[in-house]
Length: 94
Image (cartoon, rainbow, N blue to C red; front, side, top):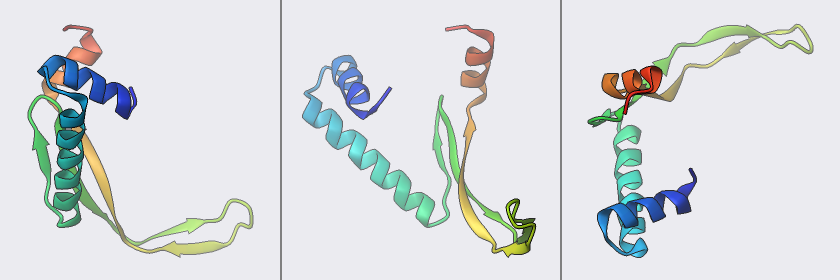
């Protein structure tokens, strides 16, 4: 599902105009992005948790040249699926 399809589905289910659905989705994405930039986690009940994790510095090898290099530490965004959703997807239950 892409963004226009998501907007269409939300507008239809909520009984609101597409423009309002787009504003809500855009606002939600902006709030989630800001929270993650500040290092906060975002819990969405029934969906999961977005969070930021610090990856440590590590050594790696360039497969083309065989040269050893050091990758710096960095922050990455992770997502953990809610337990109930995971069970529904694995079990096929609705």
